[in-house]
Length: 328
Image 1 (tube, rainbow, N blue to C red):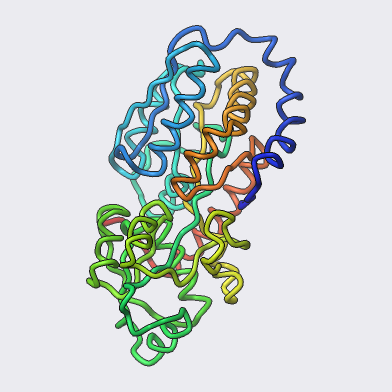
Image 2 (cartoon, helix red, strand yellow):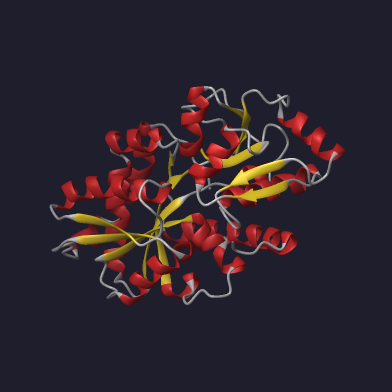
C-alpha cells in the first residue's frame, strides 16, 4: 500500500485516472451546497489534518465550503454513525484512519455498522509510516541491540503506543512475531502521550506515526531505529526501514487515511469525488502540507484501494487473534 512518488510522477500517474472520469464529471452537477467531512478523531491527529488539507483545496476547486467535523470516540464508531445516518448523496463524507477499518472489527464486539456493507472506499489520501524510536541516551543503539536485550529478558522491554488495537500496536506485534521476541506493551491515550513517554524515558521504545515522532527526533530526544515501509522516505532518507533490516511483515504496517462514503451514494458522485481528490493530491501545496506530517501521497481508488484494505485487514486479524488484543 506504499507508493512514495515525486510530485511529477504522481501527477503523471494520476492524469489517466482523472481523464477517465471526465464523462462522469460532466454527467453530474456536484456539489451544489456545502460538503461535510466527518473525522472520528480529535483535532490535530493524522486523519484530522489530512481532512483539513483536502478540505481547503476542494473548497477552492468546487466553489463550495467544505467543512471538517470532528466526532471523536469509540475508535471511529461515532463518526461512522453520523455518516451512516446521513443521506447517501455525497454531502456527508468520512475521512477514516486505517485502524477503523482494518483493526477495530476484530478488536471490538460493539461495531453497529459493517464497513464492508455500509460504506464504500473511494480514495486513499495518505500513507503515514510508523516509527520505532528510542530515547536518544538509551544504551541500545540499534534495533538488533533491542532484540538481543528482549531475548535475554522476555517481556521486560517496554514500548508505548497510542492504545490497544492501534496501528502502532499491531506494527510492534508483527515485528515481535518476526523477531521472535516478547515486549511489554504500555498503551497511552494517543500518539502524543506515547511519544512523550518514549522521549522522557518512561518506556524503552515508542511506536508512533512520523508526525508524532518528528518533533522529538528534531529536538534530539528520540532516535529512530526503524520505520515501516519497503523504501526509505525521500524526505527522511537517513531513517532505516524495517524491511531492510529483515522485518518485511512489520514493514507493511502504516497509519493510512482515506475517503469513505455511505453505500448507495450515486456512482457518478463517487467518481467525481475520486477524480477531484486526485486533483487536490497533485497540488504542490497539498503535497507540501502532507510531507510536513511525515505522510506520503496515497492515490489508490475504489477496487485497488478496497483490495489493499482487505489484505491488510486479513494480516491484522491474524495478529489480533494471536496476541488476543482487546480495546482499552
